[in-house]
Length: 138
Image (cartoon, rainbow, N blue to C red):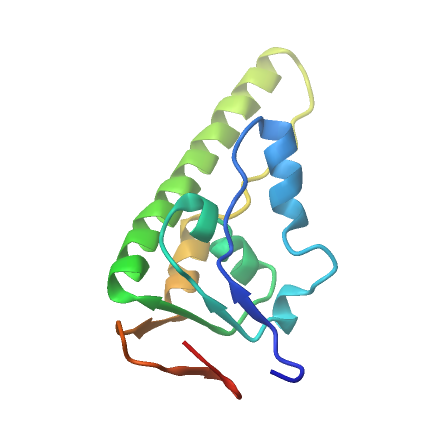
């Protein structure tokens, strides 16, 4: 895999808002999302797929490989997350306004980011190897 970067899963941290938000925004540390060649999604739990739209928003343009079932469930999970984040932002903004406090938190991604992410999925079949990058197959 000389020079190839393949990410296995891209999940979101859950927990206390400030702590999980900081971890999620740190995403890949020093790795630029645009330098990742491909993602292999093992299954559609939030802690495995929840940051895919953020990865795409930050510059990942490669393929996301998953089975059809995983792809379809991930779409539901990620879209639900986008809606929850939007509702949270709205609620927290209103609460801050009531207290005359500044509020600048923004959701990690929105529903349009999820739609864009879904366009990068490549469906794979069970028990049928597929090349995901030069020298790598799943």
